[in-house]
Length: 166
Image 1 (tube, rainbow, N blue to C red):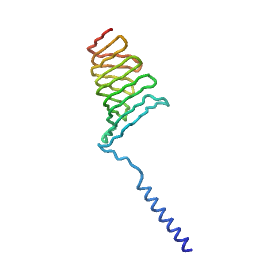
Image 2 (image 1 turned 90 degrees about the horizontal axis):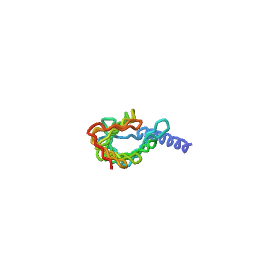
Image 3 (image 1 turned 45 degrees about the vertical axis):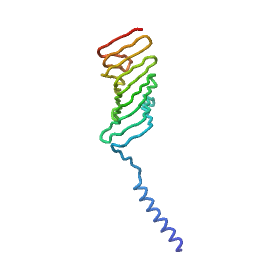
């Protein structure tokens, strides 16, 4: 009888300890200004279809806002046959908008785009830039300041347009 009482007492104490342990040991993610993640892949999916995929070397999480600073990033847009890369960027997690800067390169089929910075507007599904840009494709090289690429693929160079035919 004493063994049974001792067993149930030990079981009760063990249950109380485990319950308190579980309650206090729920994992939490402490985010501060020094928090970062390395080697991150992100898929953006709408209605079961992948809009884009990002492979990011380092993501710095800004605890004061819903933005992340990203380093060494490359994107693929599978449905559009587009790739893009940059040394740096800022990702707005609320709107899924993206600002890429430093050594920005994009490619669609045989067309290459180089820019100092470029922005992706997720609502409009469009790219834009106010920086100097260069577009190269086969025998044509276009340069200028500013760029808009609409959802339907139309490209507009905003000003100071130069064209060179090879």
